[in-house]
Length: 163
Image (cartoon, rainbow, N blue to C red; front, side, top):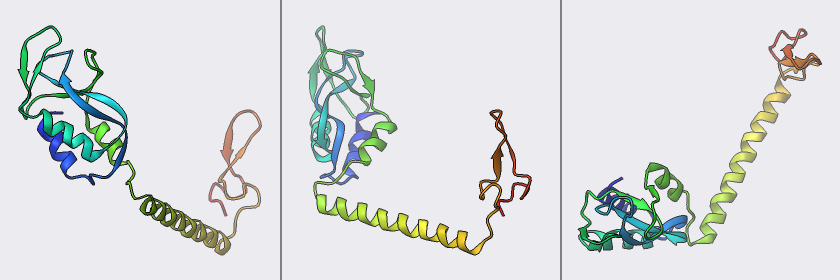
């Protein structure tokens, strides 16, 4: 991923989102000095990561063995300890970071409660469907029965229909 894509993605996110395994201070990347690396951080926010990414844009960094490198919009971005090789930031990182939680724990709890209620509704619908249909007495609706020799076979009583 290049720096400008990372910055644009971070700008589009909720700045207060708390991120596990994010990034912090920028450096010249040990693997290729003209590329940019960020120090790994166990816990941070999208806003803090955006600050570090924007700070790096247009700045000059010293390479591990010398030389000066300006980080521009097209600099490839990595997460790595200073002076170490690491991993390129990819869409997998963005997906992980987008699943962070907000600083407003009341909102997080409300969202979790809503998810639980939705699951209860789904379970209720499934239970209601079971009540309205006859379930096979041999396979109990599982469609298959265990033969006892490590293999399963289609239920002979319902012919694999479950009822």
